[in-house]
Image (cartoon, rainbow, N blue to C red; front, side):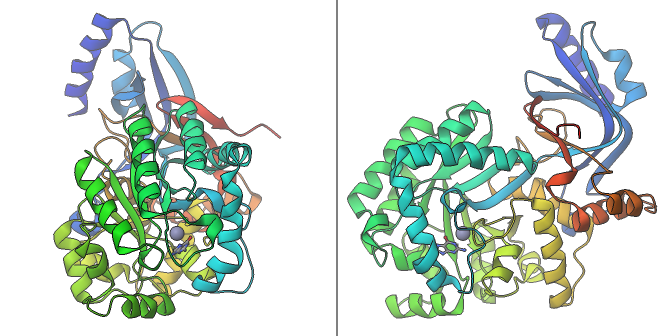
Length: 452
Ligand code: GUN
Ligand code: ZN
């Protein structure tokens, strides 16, 4: 299959005179869900591999000995021999306006929102503050190896504008939306059903489909949105092509009790969103810690996705996500950092916490599943798995080059690894931003570590 792809794209290169890049390294990618096809069938590992990128798209990948002879003259060769290369990470749930209050002490969800989060988000009405924060936020994603993300903005349209602007400049495949919140929140972060709707439409008209960007209709969570607001969100979702729906669900027991009080007629939390047309195959629900079997079943039937955010769930004391239940019902799952309730931008650090949650739940999260959640699984959860999330011919070339000696302990431990499975497990437990030597977006270097 590789050779066929090579021949096809070789012709294309000659016809069009495109300048290609060839990247040499130990290429690792997930190509399927290990839960479905088994861990060995779900990945490809090509030590001493070569990947060719043209116009931001992967046009060939295989052993260097096979790919090298097909290179057209003038191909730029980037030699990362001996270094691991994987797809970039996909963060399926993160908050842009929470970078100034991450690591806030002592509260669980509802008090944490009131005491720390809403006051910090209120600052994002200032376009200068938002622009400065957007630069920081996007740089931090790239420094941690995150090449795509589904992002919550603040309630203010101007802050989401700033975020899109910064992501567009870096050519990132990123989806974001302004937070819809018209009740039970302070005035400084409250919109109305009408203004929330018109701001969302204005932002979607401006940014959805521009470069690699997408828009997500983003109701904060049911307690912060009136019926009128949720109804308009469902309508907008229907009227535009390819939008995502992004919200929170079933994170905290006090939150769930509040939703039951607000919607006594609803069967459960999911039913509230469903009744407004928000349960779709383009819907991403963060957390879902306390879902019942019937809710998992309906999520699966709708082909909706869960953003699993272990650092956040532990930090806020929200609970332990049942990954096995999601797998049993066949619900799409991706990993989310959920900064600033989450405590790290690093998806590797997030994977380590997911492993520990698995231990507490009595199951082993194997490294292949973990890398699947962090890459292709996340991409599938965001309905972009046909474009990003794996290193395969025809996909966009968002990838990472690793520094395997980033810390003395990591360098020492990795020497004892006897398989790619063990190497990836160790990286997921000991690794963080320090192991990301280079982040490439559509084949171009978007971040690289400065030498010491
Ligand atoms: N539920 C509603 N808003 C939020 C938020 O900002 N973070 C988390 N973790 N949960 C929420
Ligand atoms: Zn969140």
